[in-house]
Amino acid sequence: MTDDRLLELAPLAALGALDGEDRAYFEERLAGSEEGRRELAAFETVADRIGLATPPVPPAPHLRRRIFAAVARPAGARRAWIWPVLAAAAALVLSLGSLVMISKERSGSRRAMEAARAEADTMRAQLQKSREELDAARRRLADEKAFRDLLASPDARVTSLAGLAAAPQAHARVVWNPGSREAVLLVSGLTPAPAGKTYEIWVIAKSPVPAGVFQVDAEGGAVFRLPMVDDMAGVKTFAVTLEITGGVPSPSGPMVLAGAAS
Amino acid sequence: MAAPQAESLIRRLTSGDHKALGEFYDLYAGLVNGLALRILHDRAEAEDVVQEVFVQVWRQATRFDPRRGSPEAWLCTIARTRALDRLRRRTSRREDAGTAPPGAVALPRSDEALAVRKALEGLSPDQRRALELAYYEGLTQSEISERLREPLGTVKTRIRTAMIRLREVLGGRSS
Image (cartoon, rainbow over all chains, first blue to last red; front, top):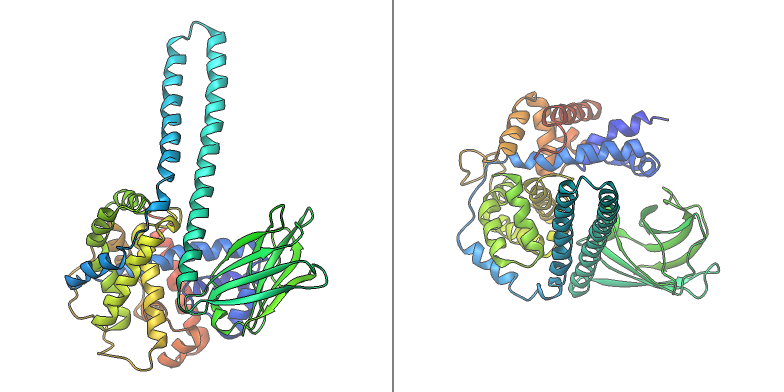
């Protein structure tokens, strides 16, 4: 069912201009409305561009040197491996192209064509898989980088989460920065969620704000980067509950981990 | 400035190419500085924001998502967030909060920037004022209502209408 009020608030939310009851309503209903999330995303791409209308002002010449000095510390070493993956993907694209040409030239032989097609399909599938692996590797890299930056930050805080009755063996930590609103959850000893279920983390300042769903690996471990939550500076508690796949807007399943941020 | 060139610069940034950072900076430092100055009205603070933005771009270039918008729009979003964070931490304003920041040059450069500027000029003055208070000053709907001494409902309608109009004119992702 269309939630007209939610949709009307989306353009204001995209600018960060909601407050009071409207903001509470919007945040509560958004997770449950795909239409609402689509509208918000569309208005966010509009909001992202408003600043482009601002007249540019050249900064002072010394600033360029200052920025280069700030990035001078080594950062590229761990990125080197990404290029072999890209090169492999490019090689696959090239061989796919030549394969198609060869198969055209030999159009007399239908069997050869079919074999070539099958091989092309296989290579296409491999290419797709390489692309997905590359995307996953890029995301992992970005997560690792964010985590390292977060740990290195002097403002970083660490909150321990203890396993509750539903998961007594579980333990977790949230490393978070109230200023930058970045946070990473590290979990161990948590049983993988049963089929159709997922773990969901909550940032609780005044009321629980959903901060993403995650799964644990076979060993019961997980590293999960939380999306930026507005009330991060005022957070009182971090908690994890077991919910249906996809997550829910407010906690309804059993709580498995919780810890007070002090 | 064509977006594909900027996107290829971002790809080079993800591989740790310092030269790409220099080229990226030369293209966009004016845009980021202009926006930070418009929000903060303080040259030193605006320069701090410019530094933060480009260091963040260097470290987090992998986070750029071309499906969400152009590199320029991405930079504006980062710059606005950082500048508004500083504005909110401040207790009092520095320099005059006029609309033209010191040192502004004539016009923005890219086609996308010109389209956004034109779209903003197409709004009614009331709509534009309310939208700009939200965008450049980071005010919420109630704060804008107080500032303008207008009913909250009026302010919400103006901003909503302005955003819908911009969405119609600018369409989705431009490239």
